[in-house]
Image 1 (cartoon, one colour):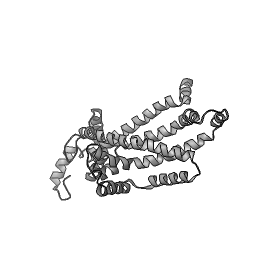
Image 2 (cartoon, helix red, strand yellow):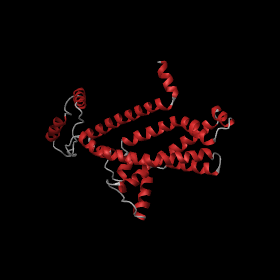
Image 3 (tube, one colour):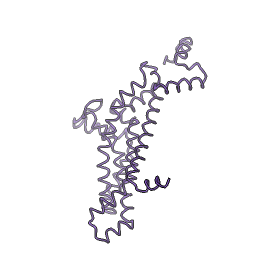
Image 4 (cartoon, one colour):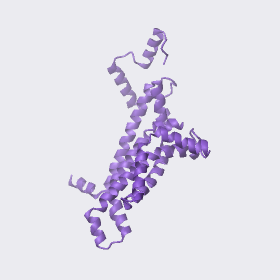
Amino acid sequence: MVGERAQPEIIEKIRKEVGSDKDIVSQYLGYAGLLLKGEFGRSYYTNRKVFNDLLLKFPNTLKLALGAMIIAIPVGLFFGFISAYQRDTMIDRIISSLSVTGLSLPVFWSGLLIMLFFSLKLKLFPPSGTGDIRFLVLPAITLSLPAIATLARITRTTLIEIFDMPFVVTARAKGIEEYKIDLIHVFKNALIPLVTVIGLDFGSYLNGAVLTETIFGWDGIGRFTMEGIIKRDYPVIMGCIIVGTVIFVLINLLVDIIYHYLDPRVKLYENSL
């Protein structure tokens, strides 16, 4: 906060102001007291309340997370279905290779390539900043790539397992139309792992996509976290971590509630309790 050559009396004064002159137990209890009041303290550098800054930045992170999932869910499911129905063909091998590539590419590299091509070469979208949908498209595409690859692989694996299950074979033997088998028997049973993956991805995106938001200058929780780390602004770091933890727990709770309506076995287990 004061640099490497600050005078000792100035350092001591600031230590008293931020409470770092107290023992570790007193510091912890003081911070816990702030949390009980719904506060995360003030930034060392801006002196603004961290909670207020998080409230301002969370809507931007929510927009980015929703934009990424709107792209990732239909595209990932589509490629997963195609790959499963065309398994062991050239189409399946191409989609599987693309999925591995999407999982392997680091976000900071794919983000820069997307920015270079769509913004600097084609000049279709602004390279960075926070604003309307034009600013949202490139970071949302970048953030969606790993989710698309994951969903495609999970969808393919799950569907292939279900195709070989006895109840699907029996349904085909009874002469039930293929689209009814797909909608009623196959897709419904594939929803559980897919909802799990979607929930985990969405929860991690709501925590703030640090690299994506930093590369594209998107003013969200991820970029706010990175700025706090670089500046060693501990109230900001702690506030971001706590908010991210709460969001992740709530998303997982929501996924468990959805299980209740998707899987009859969950209802049976609850009734037995």
